[in-house]
Image (tube, rainbow, N blue to C red; front, top):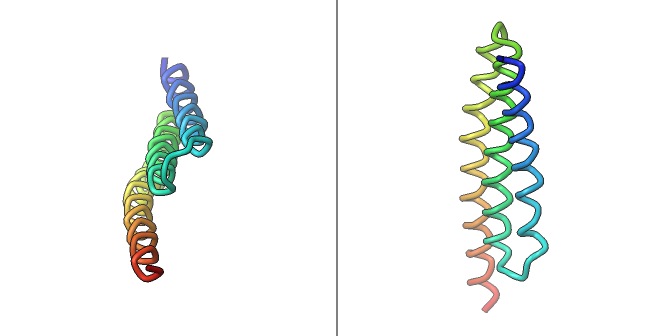
Length: 93
């Protein structure tokens, strides 16, 4: 049962990775594309690490640290990129 749940989480994570790339093909703004990609990438990566946590429960300290780091790092990176892109647009006018 744990194997099925683990592989399901890993499969969902890979699905999110691919799902995040589809907005890149659209005609929306760069910030929308970046937001969609970063959210899908974060959720996919966390799902994959959670699937690994179910497979290898003895490694829980490192895998929990990886989940926390992914959540914080990707969130902060999104804010920094949005700030940099909006500040760059104002200076060029």
